[in-house]
Amino acid sequence: MTTIPSRLASVSAISGTQQIARQRVRALYRDWYRSAPQIVSLYALNISPSMIREKKRADFERHRGITDVNVIDMLIFKSKQEYQETMNCWKTEAHVMSWFRKHEVRAPPTTFMDKFLAGRDDPQVLLPWQAENNH
Image (cartoon, rainbow, N blue to C red; front, side, top):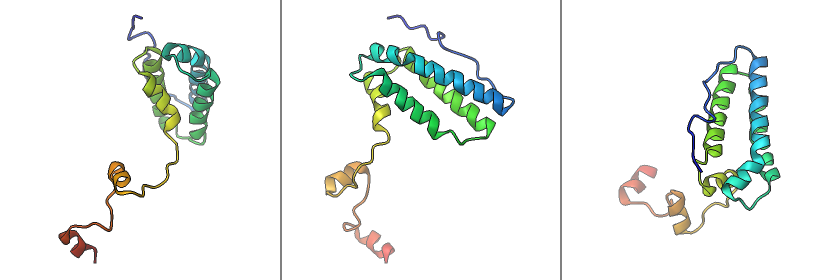
């Protein structure tokens, strides 16, 4: 499959009013919604298009309360960038499936190895100069 980098490229626009920003958000949501079946087939995902639609709906809903037009424009830009990368196949299946793993709640690490892999220090194991600073 040939990739045309400019296929979905667009100039960054600034919304003058909240009404214009709202229209741009709706158009972007429609693009994501309509492209869900194509995303599933492009990446040969073992999920239904409705799952992608639900995830994207949740992403848009998470930012529903934002009223600052500049912030809305920035979020539109980021979402359009993600849309272009996705539709031009600049991602792998793992990238697309990571959308569904981002917000999983994990149990806190309990073993040393789990804490180490999570990047946390074990408070029971301190070096001598660290123990002096903690008291």
